[in-house]
Image (cartoon, rainbow, N blue to C red; front, side, top):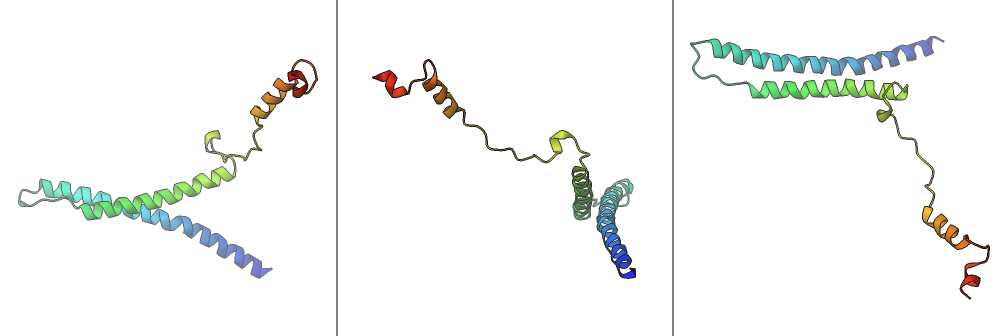
Length: 125
């Protein structure tokens, strides 16, 4: 009995960590982007500095981390809601339909069988 509780506890801990790690990545990415922008604003306001450049590497790295973290969490929420049928109808999984009826075959049958119930060959003779 105790072994089953340990397995459940470990699996729940792993599930929480799968959401915490992307959240920490998204937070770190946001902070890198914020720091790059604020550093540029501070450097622009300092008259002692002559060569002012924007920190593109920290900004783009932060953007990448932010996109990965938010994308993972958003995808996880979307697929969980899809599984529980909480999403709008356009996002629900498409149910496979059966084979479509062939209307051409039905149309030729109805044309040949219209009128009297004689076979087509008998009409032409």
